[in-house]
Length: 289
Ligand SMILES: [Cu+2]
Image (tube, rainbow, N blue to C red; front, side, top):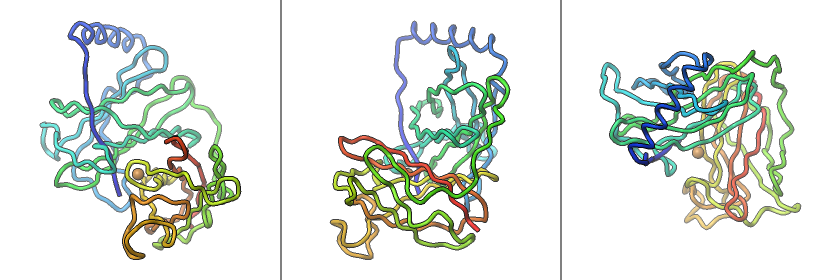
């Protein structure tokens, strides 16, 4: 499992004041921002909430905004300041459009004084967005909360396809192939992933955030979140032995240990690094039945 990272806020006081004035003016002019502050819904499949996570969005020009997350121990008004680094970051923020057509994996800045994470994000009109904050507060373990950014304009009636996708997808020069896209529900299982280039196993993959690939599953009904990492399959790696979890080794043949998924349809995004350190994302639709 994992989560995310760090931050910095910089700038002169004059710039900060100017930005506050600009942002304040813009937010008064825009009524579609939604509630000033939301309490997150716990979203990590198989986990339980041990903190309170708060979210708000500061509107910028057009559809641009700065997303803010601040988290608290239950019953406390003192923000959590101490986060573990998981997968090279203190926070992983995942932002998904309401029709599951877009996916962003972001790493907000962290203000170590206020405990506030900040991330700029520009949405598209006529869509809600689901925002997931995936963190590991020190001593608590992984916590994931979901928030909703309201739509600017009427929400599009476009409905996503919930039919399992073909098991292979194209991402840049790569063919990303899953062993299958229909899984047994409520059953832990392994799932093979192969990344080919020009009909051969890809030879130029790199590690991304400390793993050979990242899998984010979102249940299209409950909106539950799962973020897991494959290991590179034996014989295809410089790992020390077949039983050793090889998270940082990289190779085109991978195996994912999928936890028991409740029955339903899941949107899955697989991210990996290709040649020249370029990041690729391959989307799938998975049925658990
Ligand atoms: Cu990951």
